[in-house]
Picture 1 (cartoon, helix red, strand yellow):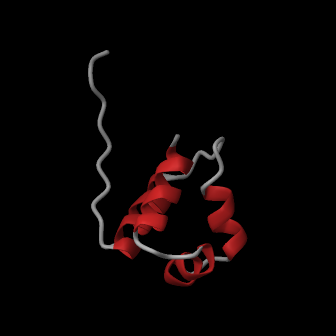
Picture 2: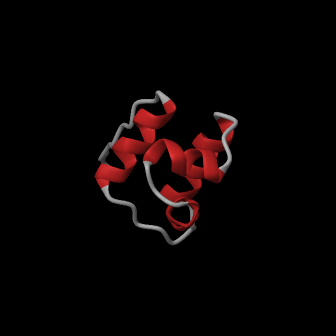
Amino acid sequence: MPGYLLRKAREDAGLTQAQMAERLGVTQQAVARAERADANPSFHLLEAWGEALGCRIRLEIAPG
């Protein structure tokens, strides 16, 4: 699920994977891996992704 959210945020910002990679200082392949359905990105990557898009990352644990 995180990979889908990362991809959606990037696409909503109108960026390609290559453009996102440039903003993050990583390769396009690293962006593609982070956007995979089975991705498990670190909090550091999530935070950097949000900063690169001018967004805030919110992590929430709520009772089910």
